Length: 453
Image (cartoon, rainbow, N blue to C red; front, top):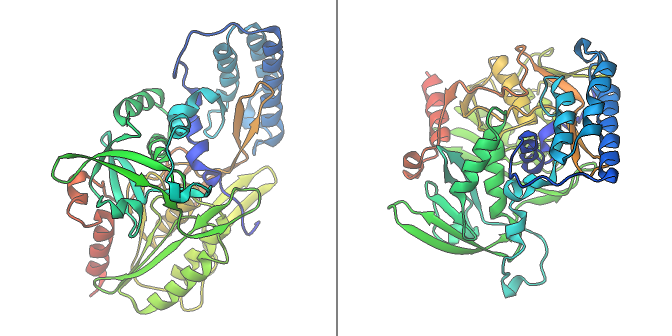
């Protein structure tokens, strides 16, 4: 197979999957404006582009036996007769829905405000000391949505959030004076019945805490004692080493290596990218952990990246050749994610941590090791976003997202829309987080210690 296949949701899970809201009729509804003749023509061209793209690029040339020409003949007139943009999108959606597959959808711009928080960010003040800096900034808080509460689940040492005294377990109520509860309610309604809901929701909220270095983000929180507090956080530069991969935008990659109580090795990283940065750090950690009681690989929040990295990383836990994590099916043929065993691979207990923001290559690695019975999975069900997908701009200005492959795990599970179900579900509740102990890490560590005679 291609050694470094880019798998889907990394292609900017924070944005692409948020755009999945686009299929929800009525989201942010306003009085529909009648279409002009020029708009109708653009919609016709857009329908044709969608139809032709699926015909030419879908991984199954037979489209599961669908009569694709008949579908065009039936639905194209609906686009031509549409009097509003919503009706036109609806007809295109009917065409896409015939596939019965995820990662296909029309993306209108109307969802951007709630999904990305872009409008709110434009009005932010900026610290004078950072006035001329235009790099990406971050608050240092990692958040998740639990029972409609936006909880801080991790705070990076030395970050703006850490300097403000924010700790895991605090609940975020507002960002830049914008109450998060109505946003959660709107998105929950709009996303009803769709997969990757937790991922989309978490990304929508987390995006409001991002911005440029030096921007001041006002955050209202409920602290551990139940008191409402407000902090104006000056965003600092995103940590890590900047890397560029193919046509993907530049991202900063980082990793954390540690030894936990009980001599348990721990490794966490944020992307399956940075071959010259992440892979050497991972290999060094695994070599150092050969004498450890067990190993924890933390893939929580990791949106994926290069599929080849999962094959090499998994090889540290597999001794024999011939094993695969799963198979990706493309129009050009099947691509097997073959495990590359390492000399002196680790034979002790392995735990993999995942959550609803673990996607793409993270799911492939976690699901494959689970199927091979080489790792126990802890956390929350993953995003169910394992497919490589592309977004093209349509003539009418909308976007069209489509998948170019299908993926089946070693155990025969279609991860797309399903995700990896953990062996032990760990929900990061407010009460658990306020103890100062990471519940997923601790559960995995305890399990490892129990496996040792």
